[in-house]
Length: 251
Image: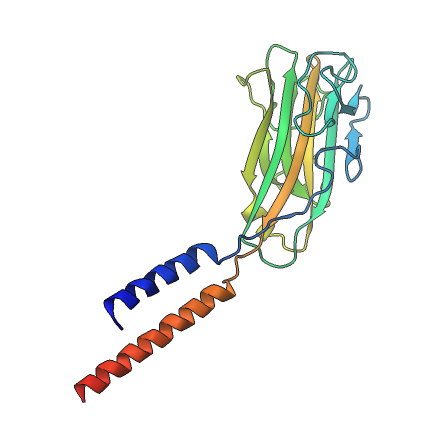
């Protein structure tokens, strides 16, 4: 093979490797993450005795108190808690993890925090109960086992905590986009039903938790491009030809 043809071969091979392999497309395994179809695919529950619940938010005022809040960041609708008194509110969606292995998994959501008290309070041990004397003013996002009680914070039920307000955090913020790598927790639960939960509890003062743009996306393991395989086969053929020529020259 001449120097020129060898150079052309290298250019061809690099070009094929860079352009021929198709990008792996992710699969969204949650539904209605923008709440444009209302609460379809979602369930919202409130602790007994709570005031308020999760509402659909549109515009720039909260659903009950009319407090100024940001516009929903995706489409025209988000989900938001609001109330005239204390309560514990949970919004969740059950989803099925693919039964075959995948390359990666990502949880993403936009969250608005509107704590109208003077601080966040997170009891220890953890609980989502507004009715105790303990001050409890917080929001959190978790992946739970599929059979977990919606209000559980047990270590046996909480597989992954993606977000939690803590004392010292800004009282009002968002909508902010949160992204979390959930590959390991989903890979350990292939074929299982899990539960994505948004929870807010307040027994100090009013609290709005806004949620939008929710998705869990799994990306398959990339497969070699047939074009790349052909190029590799071509290289192998060239190597064999060059070896034969060297043998012929030495005989």
